[in-house]
Image 1 (cartoon, rainbow, N blue to C red):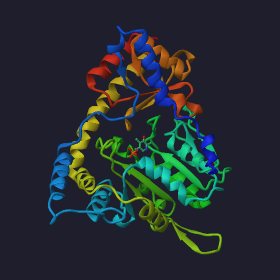
Image 2 (tube, rainbow, N blue to C red; image 1 turned 90 degrees about the horizontal axis):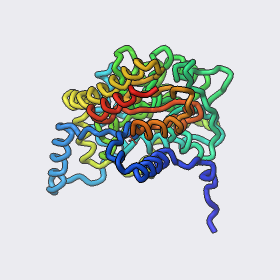
Image 3 (spheres, protein in one colour; image 1 turned 120 degrees about the vertical axis):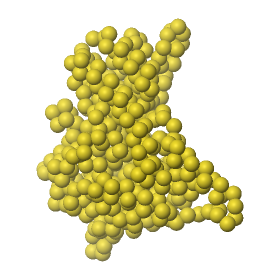
Length: 400
Ligand SMILES: *Cc1c(COP(=O)(O)O)cnc(C)c1O
């Protein structure tokens, strides 16, 4: 009989979206007359289609695969140079310098943020913000690693800062944050980089929402802070930026500067380890997708993405305006597609979920699904249509 990885016993059932779906289904069965009236502002998936230039690049690349002269099989391990350069150029346009040779192309920031745990031993002190994207907690739990939580609360604007009394080895940061929409400024990120350098810690920086940063003084990359290449790995994704949630493209930056001393006194490079890990267990993002991504990262391609992002941000504005009018405190919606608000009338998040479903047929995401600090909070997303979002907020306006 195999002995199983019993760390899986410690992973919480990922019941959030399943439970939302179950409650909506029960409601629909009990109120068939209202079923068609439900507006979903809960799921973190995009709705706008791929941009014109991405689709053109996909078609062209598919055509290349039809002829033996232009056919491509296995690609380079780190990803094609053309797309690594396009990512590096994109960074450059945002005033950040990232060497194209430090960029690894992949099929998702979810897989990369999950797989990166393999590079670190079990006995590290790992800091994870709460609330946050659940993948960091679950993947470390599957590995049997201990997590220390950093509280994101209204008092710190949901942006936990370093605590010098805690000696961490690995720190997860997600900015702009899912679910709170909060975004670190440069001084705050510098405090994290200083802390990491002083403690020889590694920051794992999830920049999946960098393209939503609208305030120009806010950093879109940890590498906007000097010294970050000596302490930080960064994850980027086209899922939210370019509507690639079903198309799949991401990248991870592992600077060559990330070298640490091993127990035998030698040197180990995280860049080399990630290269070894990826080339052993991953065989690359499809060629046609890398071609589409190359176009997305071009100036013209990104302009098209920004049109979709502006579309979403108009929804965020409508949601924020309604909450402000109702006197409900919230974060996000400016540099992030998410709006995170305090449940009115001291409700807990699942209570508010049921209340909104029953009274106005609007579905959101209970904050409890992102950590204990989310218990009294609620997340709405701007990924719906203008019409549905406006309608949902008109209904919301009639409550409380
Ligand atoms: C959506 C999201 C991602 C993107 O994951 P992909 O696997 O690239 O689709 C990464 N991090 C966070 C915090 C997200 O919300």
